[in-house]
Length: 335
Image (cartoon, rainbow, N blue to C red; front, side, top):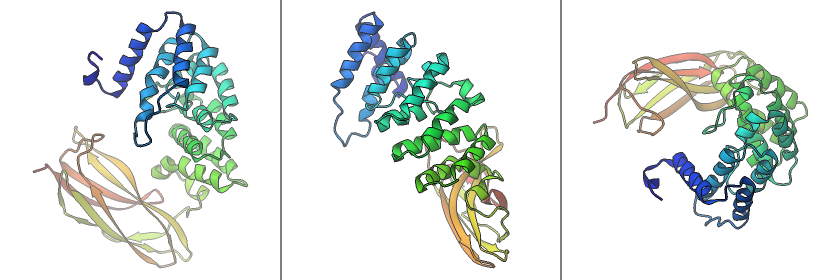
C-alpha cells in the first residue's frame, strides 16, 4: 500500500501488478497458474459498484508485462479471465510480437461461446484503442483487423457490435475509403443490427463530411438549403456558463431531403489559434421549401478533458458536412 494513495488509476494498476510479481513465484508458469486460480474465485463485488471490474486489472497487467515470452499459456489465460474486466490492453504486446499467431487466435475467438471473448477479439485489435499501447502495424495496414470484423458483422450481442463499430471508426481515421468499401459491401442484404454497426462506424466520417458517406447512410448527397443568420446569445459568455444559438434552415430543393445538421465550435487554444470540434445537432427530413427552426445550448462548464481559453470563438453550422453559416462570440474569464 506504500505510495498507492497518491497515484492515478493506471499507475495504481502498475504498482499492484509489481507487488504481485514480487510475491508470486519467480517461475512464470507457476505464477500464472495462481493468477488464473484467483480469477476463478474472484469476488465480483455488488451490482451497484460501477468500478468493480477494475479491481481485476492488475492481474491482466501482470500477464501483459511478464508473459509475452509464453504466448500459448498467456493467451489462454487472458481468454479465460477476460469476463472479469477486459484483456483488451493485455493482448496488445502479443499482437505486436506475434502478429500471425495472435490473429489466428483472434480469428478463433470470433466464434467463441462467450460474448466477452468475441468482444475481446475486436476490442483488443483496435488500431487506436484508448489507454492502450499503440501497435503501429495495425494503423499502417488494418487488413488483418478488417478480416476479424467481417466475421463479426452479424454479431447478436450489442456489447460486441459496439466494439466492431468503434474498431471500424478507428480505422476510418486513417483509411476512410477502405472502411467505406467494406460498409458498402456489408449493406447488401444487411440486417438492422448490421446497419447499426455501419451507422456507428461512420460517425467520424460524418463529422468530417466525407463525400462518400452521405449516400451510404441514405442522406442527400448534395443538399440544397439556405441558412438564416445565426442568432447567438449571449455574445459574451463566461467560462462556466452556456451559450445558445438559433437559426432557420430553408430547403431550396424541389424534392424531400434527408440532412445531418451538426455544429462546430472553434475553440481558442493556448497559442491563441482556433481549432474546430464538431458536435451532433439533429438529423432532419425536410420537404421542398420547408423552413425548419433549430436551436442548441452549449455548455462551457469546466471539464477535465478540456481547458477553456478566453478569446473570440466561432460557431459554424454544417449540413451534410458543408459549412452553411457562421457566427462569433467572445468567451471571457469566469467571475
